[in-house]
Image (tube, rainbow, N blue to C red):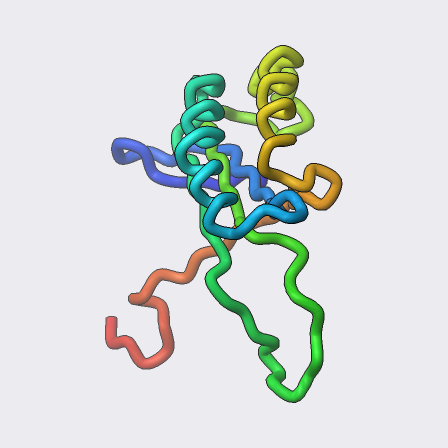
Length: 139
């Protein structure tokens, strides 16, 4: 995903990657979160110098929007967003943002806490509504 944001009064482009992460089978949610926050996140941040925003949003519960429906649990435990202050698409930039040696280090560490076969990188396009544009707001 490429999103636009304001940086020091001018528009800039940011590459934003969204990952759906599933914990390794047999690992408790608490151990998963602890490992991710205290081991993997610091490692990833140290290996990715162009990373300007790195968030992990952990699922703490879920329910179907139509409460009468029976749905399986989501296939992930965490939504991870990685934002890079670079121009271009992931396809154009992945070789320099995630070189092979960095990928190998991260993949090796991911084996400790993730079900790597279940994880997904999703491509999205983000739109934002500002409160002043909401219906009913006088402006």
